[in-house]
Length: 163
Image 1 (cartoon, rainbow, N blue to C red):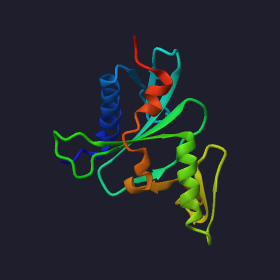
Image 2 (image 1 turned 90 degrees about the horizontal axis):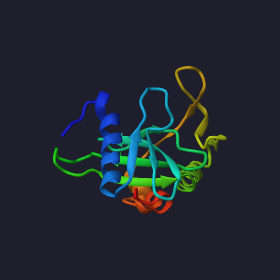
Image 3 (image 1 turned 120 degrees about the horizontal axis):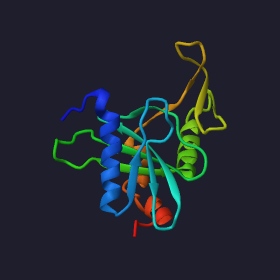
Image 4 (image 1 turned 180 degrees about the vertical axis):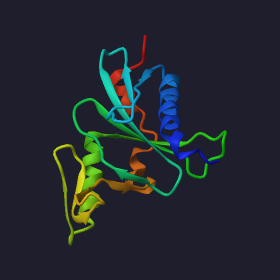
């Protein structure tokens, strides 16, 4: 199966909304190209969560910039190797999970100057992008975040289900 690049993001967001619906949690998609929140969810505990969703079909999720702030969750959706009727794999990360992951990966490059900025984005000083600025972000592979696979309780435990 191959999802076009132009619809991969939307497919990922809606499949996460569907998974939350299966858990009796209402998810409201947000729309636009310059947004930091893909889904808003609100449950019985009267807590609002903002979800950022990243989908992939290849080896890694490229150029991930992480998450920051309160009540934010990052959900990675993996369609790689799946047929049309197969359920993708899901990896759910809190801000603490993202920061721990990013720091582990940064530590693997002791000879490079990489830091997390105030929004937890890895900044690669010395690696310059096409605009002449330091490269921001990092690739993420499923095996690097395997402990976060199918960890839906990171969401359900915070918001609960809709009554």
